[in-house]
Length: 564
Ligand code: GDP
Image (cartoon, rainbow, N blue to C red; front, side, top):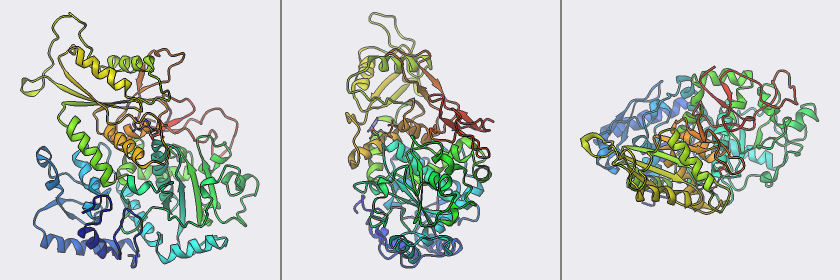
């Protein structure tokens, strides 16, 4: 079986009952011939198949579904796991109904195996969110690529025909992919949430070189989220803030008239004007819902901005009773590394991190090619201040008091460092090689790659970045660099509140060198600095709002918290 294409015999068999002719979820070339129109039909198909599975396949694991989702037996992933994991063989791979059953397991191993690498979920998906997800999956299947409705919608877009109030219920949100991987992952989770709130089918630009399918599995069963290369708006990646289709222009210069526009464009780049951010205030009952195609450019995390809109807020409150769980839950639903990336993650984890008593992640984001001593000093000051790493005995110093683990052996700590440069890793590793730790703890230091500098649209580079973000998310505690979306995604995916290093001034270690954040949510830079009711442009900061706090590392950014 070719693990990168998922073209196993099973992969060909399973989609048969989904009504798919050719199974190739990784290439996005599925031909959906008969799409189950209703979620109900989907559910009964699943049930029928499951009965057959139960009767014919003895080595199964029981996984309980919730909320009317079928109770599911899935084929065991245990055979692929090593011995210690087998002891935990009863884990709920579908995360309490968050994930839908029915995918071919071998085509996306991470979807079923990640539960064995992660800690138990600390935030549960609400029944309302699960219901909305099942409805959204049905929408993606009913209107998604290759369906008759999609072909009609793209034909209308191609022919320049304006489509308002389409009566087939198929509206679309196209996400433009740009910037680094952390930015893209924040944008993708945001776009998905926005698509759910506005009942739009999400289609993601796979990027130059079609990178998306090489990084992630398809999240929705029986369809693809990959925007096809023949998307009729050929220059969509070049759309700028000044485009006539930009929401700000439609509101401010066209009196909300969309006459003559083939689509509406939302420009929510980190450098967007406050006028462009008005899109957060559209409650989709205004005019936006009438437009069939919407194109979104963002490199940002949108959910805090969506909370500024009273209508979205009501819906989000129902979906996420705990406000600090938005990225954590949405990312677990949406972001399943491809088999190739999953192999990179698990090989590294099993080789270097698994056996340690504790794992510490340190993400160092540097923009300078040359080593920066003050950055190294800052990281070490942080790990010392927060008791994340032991000190080392100075040469000729006394005998350390030994910290022991179960069985009387020394406690071990594995440190995962991610950085474009290897210098920081080399220094920290050498420190624990040359000297004993003060508490006798055995500290091992590891870095998967040191790419030197950031590359754009380079598959292998992006795959390494994803593997490292994911590995960081599997640690127990984490230190991240302020302002870095790479770090934001790593800690939020892992459900950790990080120790964040703030930007040093004048090459001096700040005091304190780092601080613990109030929430595991990513920081959002591009939120309205106005009240949606007043539209009072000109404010320096976002208005105060329940469950929204100023970020520790950026006074102009906000993040969701559980505290009022
Ligand atoms: P940000 O610029 O820190 O907000 O993070 P982004 O992820 O958006 O962009 C930085 C990009 O640089 C990443 O996507 C990677 O391509 C690269 N990069 C930065 N730091 C690392 C790292 O520690 N490991 C790897 N493999 N790549 C990195």
